[in-house]
Length: 144
Image (tube, rainbow, N blue to C red; front, top):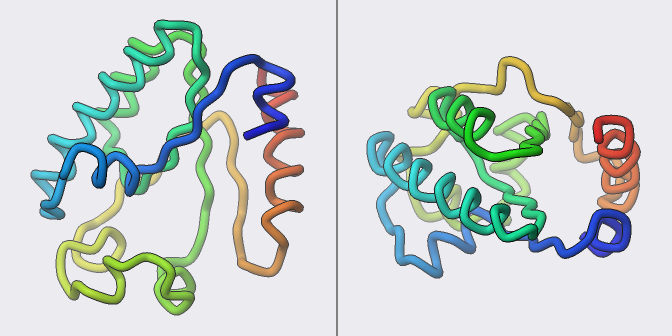
């Protein structure tokens, strides 16, 4: 995030988990996730409309929401971090994988993976976060 801010100006980083905590979005069904996704997309449009870059890390935006973002958010760049759900679950950093056994994207909710992201990064969990961040920054520079 710091390198992005230095190069491209004011930038905030927020995750889907952050938004769930801030706005108390506590449902995980497919329908609830879609409704939250629409609200979060509108929030992103509001923030970026004030000339603040936003890196929004979220799992499972639906195709319909991505299309809305591409149409309504100027300079929208879609970055797909491709990773194996079983590896993510085995690492165990996300509470949902520990505390729930249903309404899990990639397990019983079929994900809608991006069909044409601007950038794709493979995360096989064998590279450091720094290495992945450097790789992503290089791809962002080529895209913008």
